[in-house]
Length: 242
Image (cartoon, rainbow, N blue to C red):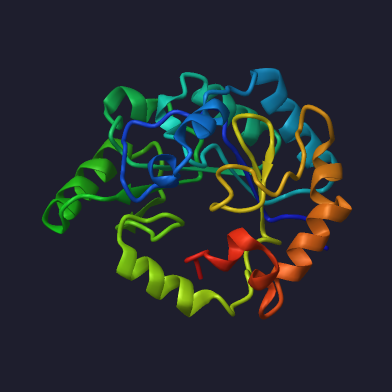
């Protein structure tokens, strides 16, 4: 298996919203979930992760987000500079709630930013214009993502059932592309693995290289990369993602 092309480092687990579509809020066992989501990665470990990535030959994009809102992170300017210091393209995905003149200045050094718009379509264009003005001269590449994604336990049962049925036989194609280190230090398989049920290990106990190339991780990715592979895992059988 080849090395990942994107590295997501979730430095904390908080968010500004409680969107019903998001697994943060729709996952049934909230108490157990919140225990995992309350962690914070220490700065020295973030730097160590980046250093390890450089050492093993990673030369892709680094993002400081997952199920969190990165603009809540007071250390974000430090982490952006860390990542850029190692020569990585650096970006974040944000909902834009905290984006103002002050927070925009802290984003200097980002190669691009993706702003997720969940609002009324009539408001999206207006907000996008404001964001681009705020980021002018700071981040040149401002991208947009629109609407909610159907996830496990989505409150839209009809859409959820249709997505599960339509994608059940499909291979998962992005598992080989992206490595995710969560705020607890544990490695996640994908963006649906919010409870870390695949138990891929922790960066506190293993190196980045050991986590990515472990026999367990390679075996799971290989199975899911094939047609019908989702049927081998209970959680993946009900995955709505393409």
